[in-house]
Image (cartoon, rainbow, N blue to C red; front, side, top):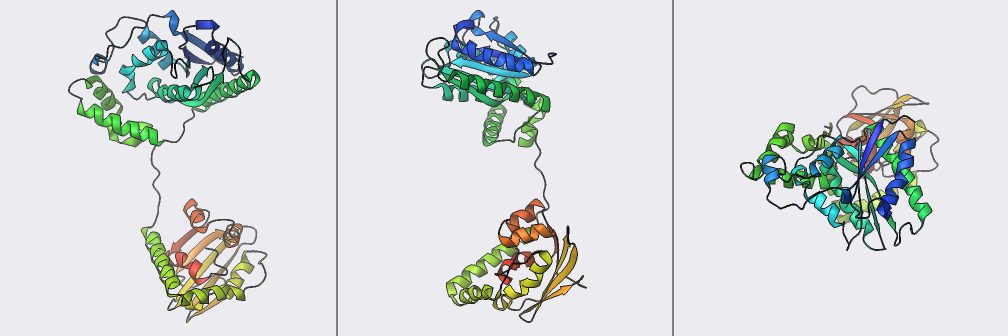
Length: 391
């Protein structure tokens, strides 16, 4: 298959191509190639990468002053279609080689990348620490403009002595396919609390030190417009909804009234008795609405004067309304002259709500059905029709 994508893997093992980390990366190579993706492995032990001195000059000037091979490797990661960070566990953490490489990446660590490319975290241990090490590596993928689509971990002692090798290889194939698919789809995942925490903490830190050690970091944030808000950082916009605050107000009032009635005791007994008048199960939405007056609670209606218009769509489309007046409820066919609320719903949706298979409030928020008019009447349905509410 023609190679269309490139994934760059950084191997932090001091054993280069003979260790278990290298063997796990090779498990990914063929499945990646089958999906049209080339794997390039950078063995850190073969490159000169000095320790970070902690001078913070990279945050101020934009680059590290140490003349070694670190920057060239990072640039390969930034240019790749996918990124893999791999390290065996040495004393419950990544190797010294990998830690030095990551520490020296501080110049990019405070500068969110505008790219969102897929990545993997790979780690192997003798039986302790590989999952937490993989989590650590997965969290640092973002430094290089990547996000984790998964983690490949294994337990092994001697070279090639994997526990459940077949399972490890199978998981590698799955992750390789998923990584390439994520590249093709330009996949994104929803923003998380970790994104928000980073944005809040780092944004504040960068602004506080913009005139000193984080001058270049500040310029990067300004250039990308990241101070414009969290949405600008994650490149995901919050969807505006047409939520009516009257729904919340009516719901709270109805909830308080129910609670008060329970404490007083009397109304509770009346409402418990009301459903007893209902009998049989409706075969369709028209029958359901016809039977709703049987479950009507006149005590709950009190001084309610309202007309509920139902415009039912679907296989058996029809119009009907319920007229509540003087403590009574009457079913009528057709369209009402001046309904207090108009409920437009597919028949199967209202049936599912009435049966309890679908939550009425969630269905309304999702847009499974719509309502126009006095939305407080929608909230009152459950109280007015404790037997056949459909709410």
